[in-house]
Length: 192
Image (tube, rainbow, N blue to C red; front, side, top):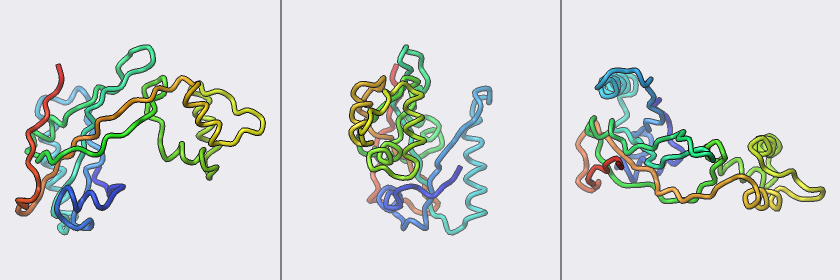
């Protein structure tokens, strides 16, 4: 899926073009039974279709998440990846996003920071996310407790784990000349 990124300035800083001239490769998913080289075969065709449909786009930015995530009982749910298919498709590794703290649920999923802020600030959608967190094992809100206080307590007392994410790896492709100002970093390699 090619998409408009959440941070338009990332197109400018990572890809070296104005936001309207860049696009993100937001999701890339193939079934596990796709044969060898299927990823680069499909990427080549997706990029060709993109160039035909949106000729004003001068480049693509994508990220890979290197952090593995497991359930509370140790079952691996997300292995993490260093962008091996992006490397095989000659993506230029240009750095990492900022490191950040995440809260993980017992099922290994990431608690959405935006949804947590809805609870903290009593915004629309807070009740639904409260119920979601309750379903994951968060304690019940006490009588008279506001969302901010409850969330602080739930994250401390509940089954959630706070982890430091090292930042996603950023890769770019330009359809015109790559500016010399963009870094060209060594490809990260998969661990073990």
